[in-house]
Length: 74
Image (cartoon, rainbow, N blue to C red):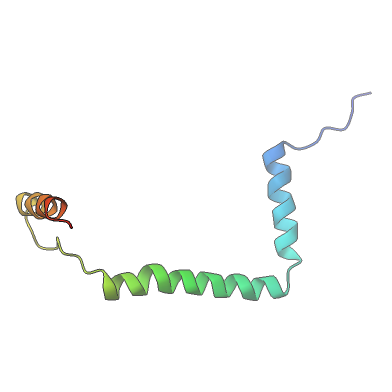
């Protein structure tokens, strides 16, 4: 008689986390807050504070601008 085969380790880890997330109540709200904050940090703040300085430039102008910024950086 063969022993009962267990699923592979990655599958067991996935099932462990899946079962944990299914049974969450407060955790879902916290994850929603975390995702909203990440969206604000990486999308909204990037658009407001980090303009694209290389937009509309040719490849030669882009390389010159990058080189000048690297050399003149203090």
